[in-house]
Image (cartoon, rainbow, N blue to C red; front, side):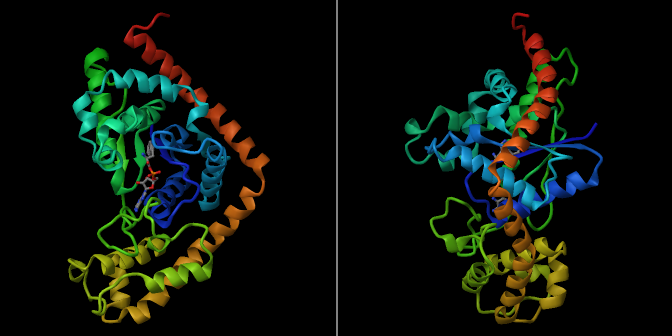
Length: 335
Ligand code: TYM
């Protein structure tokens, strides 16, 4: 059977890239209604980099509130905090002994986030993608909706599953080879200041991204200031090649409205950014305003969010516990 799993780091504030690359597809998959959807707030991943223990619980609640504000329905989908279900940590240890050091060292995210002096990076940062594989396989998830930047981590997840199946599975596919779901023009949203850099929470410039909580004026201002070139928009998608910033803004418009880039260009091709930017700001505000309004309402009710997270952890554990138990038996742990 089809089972969906995905997660986000609790960073306090989600941006348009998180929404268009991941959340929007989480909601679409949930609403298709043919698969169980499990959406996790990955607080264990959040401690691989320096973090503030006092701020973390609130950041987890904020992420859960953002999921719900974006349309994840806690009565249908499971929403929970990773650290509340022990299978993630237990399976991660087993997978640490299945994955090879070379696999982990090849991960570009470790190369980027580890900084210049890798000796000083946490060991957790190196095995971060192994924990991610445990997240997914603890539920034997078949599909994982994510942005383009997670592709390499999902390949590692398949490598771990295949290696486990080969070494211990008696020729049987105990773990599935999980499919990434990376789709549409929203899969890779770039910075508003630099069309070659990913839109990211760690960018020092707040003008580089649109946050889910930005108000209408802020969104309009950021889009107005977004970097562009002086040419009008092309008539065809080929015309966007070598125009990273133009391509990104057209992609954002397309992802927000559910159109293709070609359809957006059929409407705006030949027009300058003076006309296109206000139209883009309008759609962005139209789509994000209800989400940020709902987010603010939800975040005010901490007890309700905690109730949802507690219930979600219970439901997640019911699925993960038997899979973990069987994995431990297969690996030969005392039982
Ligand atoms: P994270 O928290 O960095 O990002 C959450 C999701 O947002 C997507 N995303 C983007 N999509 C398009 N354009 C962008 N500029 C952009 N920036 C972020 C990411 O691809 C992701 O889908 N390792 C993961 C969290 C994780 C996970 C998992 C995901 C932990 N365990 C298991 C799936 C399955 C991460 O750090 O995502």
